Each structure stands twice: as C-alpha cells, then as structure tokens.
Image 1 (spheres, one colour):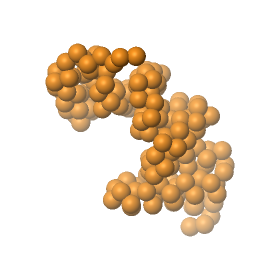
Image 2: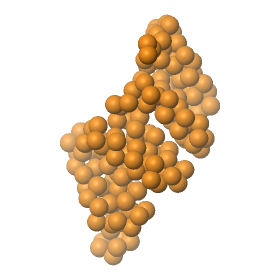
Image 3: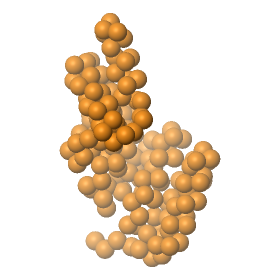
Length: 167
C-alpha cells in the first residue's frame, strides 16, 4: 500500500497547531488539527500519535483506540503506538488486550519505560505483585538510563510496597 503524502509542509503546519492546542489543553481542537495533518501526510507518525492522545485525555477511549489501531496498520513496529494503544485498553478496562499491546511495545523496545510501567500496573491489577515490582524496577532503570525524570514507576512501586507492608 502506497501511503499518501499530499502536502508534507502543510501537514507539519497542522501538526504544530495541534501541539499548540494540546499544550493549551484544548484537546478537541488538537485532535482535529492532528487529523488534518494525517489527511495531508499519512506518513507523519507524530501526527498519528498526537491524533489519539487528546482523545484519550478527553476520555474518548473508543475513538483514541481507533486512531492508534489505524496508525499501527501503517507503523506496526512503532513501540510508542503500541504503548498508547495498551494504555487506552487499560483505561477502558480491557486488561488482556492492554497487556498484549504493552508486551508488543516492550518486544519492539525493551527499555520502553512507560510500557514497562504500564505492564507493572497490569500485573499489579492481576495481583502478581512480584512481577509488577520487577517491571516497575525495570522502568525506573530505563528512566535513569535515558536521563528521564518520569516518576510514575517510582510512585507505582512505592504504592505497591506500602500495600504489601514492605515500606
């Protein structure tokens, strides 16, 4: 399948506008501008990513899942897209589908800190605390390796340890 790339420069303009709307927490407008960017250049993976995120934050989970699923048809080896789909599935309480998507993200990028954290959360939901902690620790290590200050894995691990009476 040949991907459409009608007007990449105009697509980038819409993507910049989508990012500006996203930063202003205008999620409906951000999703619309990202969609316009995709219509002009289906090869713009950043536009695909940004098309689903504002929908997720607006709690429009089915629409967000649809965006990420469509993107994965074009970019099946993009770990971020698999992670985003997994997070949507988790938020929509589709735990098995969420785990499959997150594990795919980790297979594609073994040090994907966000995916490792999400997998820890899924394992914790299944009461597999030892494996959840293992994945939180891996996420913390990945964040440190990448010099990221993300704290979700730290917070999640801390909450689980407190719940288990180990803190």
